[in-house]
Image (cartoon, rainbow, N blue to C red; front, side, top):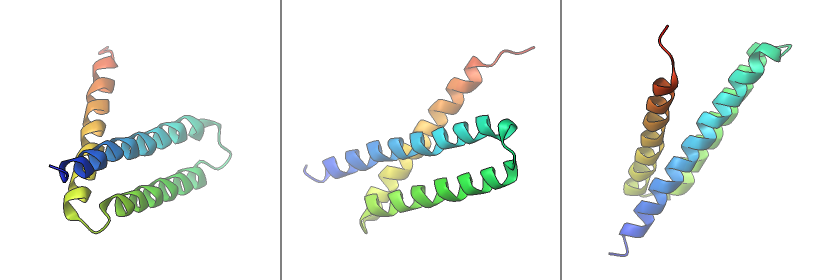
Length: 93
């Protein structure tokens, strides 16, 4: 039973990583029109988000594939929920 809690924690942290990654993407997309160098902004944002996301997955996994899988599931589940929520908000013209 005690093995269940680290997996739940990894799942929740995966959701948090997803918020960080997608929130950074959203902030970058909002700044691109106002940026003097949008290409540099997009590249730096992408490298930073990917780097921190991979580092977070590595730290959460701690050498255990089960934790890594739980973290991935949390990440992708929240991503799917946010995508469905955003599509539901769009108006069809």
